Every structure is written in structure tokens, then in C-alpha cells.
Length: 82
Image 1 (cartoon, rainbow, N blue to C red):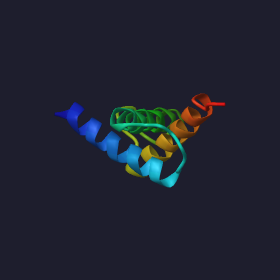
Image 2 (spheres, helix red, strand yellow):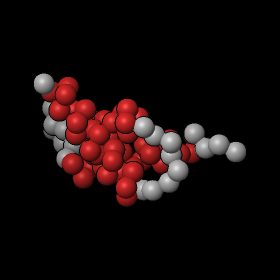
Image 3 (cartoon, rainbow, N blue to C red):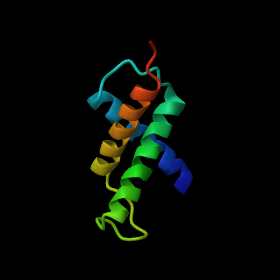
Image 4 (spheres, rainbow, N blue to C red):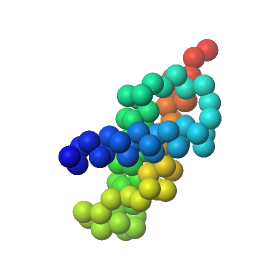
């Protein structure tokens, strides 16, 4: 059940990140969910190393959206077509 909730929350976070940072990224349902999940993991990883979260803690919703926005920016730079 934890995995299903992670996918659902990741998809919502990915949608919010794409709405806040519009562009022409050709992302479908699966890539949007992966974007949100990776953004949440990135925010958790960075927050734990900076001491914002405990070792077993996870990032909050806003930090997850910010992490997804960073991943979206990086994806846009890497996947940019000429």
C-alpha cells in the first residue's frame, strides 16, 4: 500500500511542479509520476544531509514540489531538442 500511495503522491507532486514551471516538456502520465517521486526523493535526500529531517524522515509536500521542479528543470536541459 505504501508504494501505491507513493505513486499517487508523486503524480500529484509532478502535476503541481509542471503547473508551476510550464514548458514544452513532452511528459506523459508515467514520466510525470516518476518526476514527482524522484523530486520527493531528492528533497528527502538533501534535507537529511542538511539536517532538516531525521534519518528516517521524509520531505514535506512543499519540499517535494520544489525537488520535482529541480528535476523538471534538469530534464528540460537534458531533453532539449535543437
